[in-house]
Length: 372
Image 1 (spheres, helix red, strand yellow):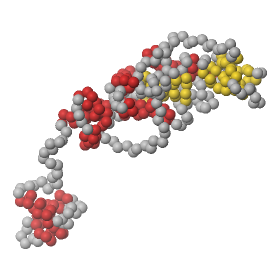
Image 2 (cartoon, rainbow, N blue to C red):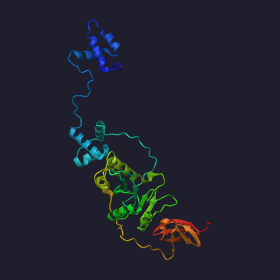
Image 3 (cartoon, helix red, strand yellow):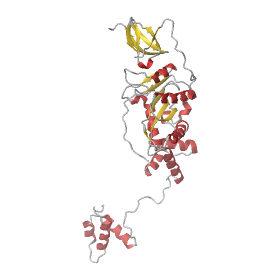
Image 4 (cartoon, rainbow, N blue to C red):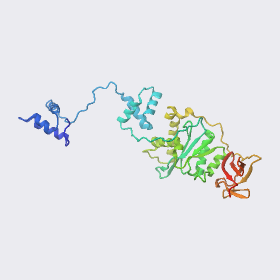
């Protein structure tokens, strides 16, 4: 039976003093203190043999032949503190790099025993996953939420991820989220890795505004390079789930609980972690392979000069005016201010009076001359 609630130590001292007095009734004292006779005899025996420690002793066995070696525990904790990874990744790295066979449950127990595990509530998954068949079919691009550096400036991390391989193509600490900044970073990325077939982004600036103004100067530049542009549904970040998951790893393994003095230090840390993410860190969605094992650079080379706009001889070409409109069939039709100054081509569809509007090789909208 347990000791009654109050001060456990004072209750035990009082019980031992009273039970050793002459004429005391052992059974009655045990009942009064709410303990069993077995417990009373245990503490009385410990007192008579010189045991002055009245706290509960550990029930841990003196020997644990199957206990994990201390050196392995130290390696597990070192990997956790350095990377922030979970049990599965740590187990995989120990087996891959050091040929140590350790069960995932053992690694998790070590992390849990040393207070390195934070249990998060499970999030329901109601969306369907997708993955492109080969590298460079689709790149996902977004800004990680901005935060303050040690010098007071705001850092805006720009991230670009290959959908097929999860390879991190760009991780840049930017001063702002303006078109010129993004275009400069993308130019460096295109020069190294080539051009993708398509890029997926949300509807925010600088690559989108809303459903009525899907194109911006930045996305027009991408179309000019022959890169398709896609936007996720508003308020539906799951469409960019891979890049969002990349942001979560970036926050946990790089940003959480740390402060960086300036952009130079921040970018240096980004470069170190991007190499680890691409070449060292196992990825569960890739069967614990690393992203570089599935990525190849694009065969499409970045042109240092934008290619000229060329349309077919049967196309009806119009120049977009400063207000984003074109004149066609003695009427004005809106194309978008992002295209102002550029030429677009109109091609008839199978429906009389309905035309597709093309910029370069991409259909950007449809107009209906039948409507008043």
